[in-house]
Length: 240
Image (cartoon, rainbow, N blue to C red):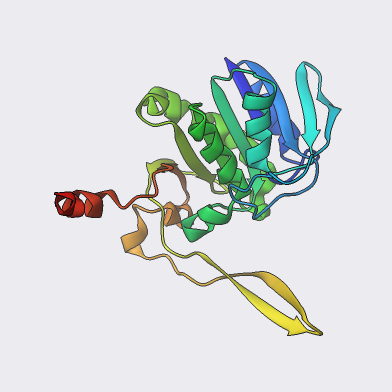
């Protein structure tokens, strides 16, 4: 299996080398990750200027590069620029959960969205900073579930979030708003401050990615389709 690994925390993020070593059990690994942290860059790409590429030494046996652009551009460059073919793109392990509405801001998720755009299967792995170091120990549990249930044959890409000590795995849908930023304005400068959790999880959330609160790994099938398909089906008769 040919595997591309990227992230949005940067080429020297603490979770990248453990992920690469784990993925090398599955096949041949190439790493192209951002030169600097790109958290919150979503599916952004650079179309106005050139960006640097530097070969780096991460893990013996895995070719690795630092690209001075976004996670989506790392995937684009690997597939479109270097003309490499991959069976799987893995993004992560992100230092922070990617759940609820936060998914649309995530550079980690943006990378797998781009992989799917280019027809390549992809998985994003994220976890909380509180148990970041333990997440790699749970990758087998999550990936074995994906393989056992042939999930990649059913959908191109999945968003996977890992709690501290998972007791099981649940297929989920995207939940509601999960984070809220606040801002201050001083001397003409706007500054964002931290992230506040503002949506509690209740029993009705057992089918959303909020199941992390109950100690379950959340696996959410994703799509790049932005059209409201049920409404489209309802309104298409207006086309005559």
